[in-house]
Length: 292
Ligand SMILES: Cc1cc2nc3c(=O)[nH]c(=O)nc-3n(C[C@H](O)[C@H](O)[C@H](O)COP(=O)(O)OP(=O)(O)OC[C@H]3O[C@@H](n4cnc5c(N)ncnc54)[C@H](O)[C@@H]3O)c2cc1C
Image (cartoon, rainbow, N blue to C red; front, side, top):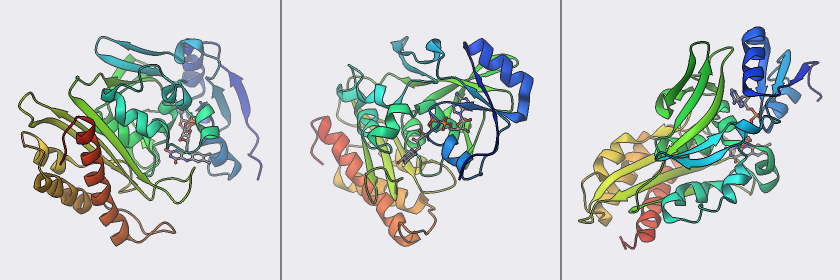
């Protein structure tokens, strides 16, 4: 199908895009990489009257590490993460893993992380990574810019804290310490498919080898990405033994609330969530030189 008729505006700056959004309100939608919005328009699931294209705004394509934060602007592409010079560092292993399995290489050429967070698909990959890493999203609204922790940003399926007339300008990830590693585990039917189930895991070890901090989140396990705070609490302060990992995996299985579909039954997906958390923890720990 072809989309319903719409007006197209190419914004020249972030100020311009924001002014247009304020002027047009509910009639307008931001167009970032278009990898979710355009298919939705073609299926007539979305019928915006006006698209505000932000792709030409240079100031929104920034990727930089500053003041303990990695900042990715609203049009920083998935492929830019995959190729970033620092992405091979152990501390960024969760982002690195995920950047190679989101959709397929063609989609990653245009798709943006911020667009993916704003889309908030229940089976999305970046929302899950953002939860495990405790990211924040910068949202520009009438009263200025505000920083929204990811747990508050993801409201419900396809719904976020970005209100009518607002736009997200960046996502920020805390720069992990030296003794941090992560892992992204995704089971998909074929390359380019959304997750049947996926787990994002990040672990920081203390000097004595105990787990100082852990971030655990699941994709395709509820209305939107799910933080498994029960598993995070079980891990904190513990030696990373097989028993502790089993406990965290069981907590993930229990928390997972997937829907049955062509990719699998509820029982299969719940079990898979636990298996993927266990694999993710073992891989993250192995990256830190710990066999578990
Ligand atoms: C074949 C295919 C396979 C895919 N597989 C996967 C997959 O396996 N995993 C996965 O996670 N995703 C997958 N996707 C989705 C893809 O990753 C999209 O790129 C992503 O979901 C949206 O990013 P975008 O930049 O293209 O956003 P767009 O499509 O441009 O926008 C998506 C939504 O977010 C809004 N939006 C975008 N940017 C902003 C902003 N700055 N401020 C406010 N609102 C904004 C738009 O108005 C729209 O409602 C797939 C897509 C395709 C076409």
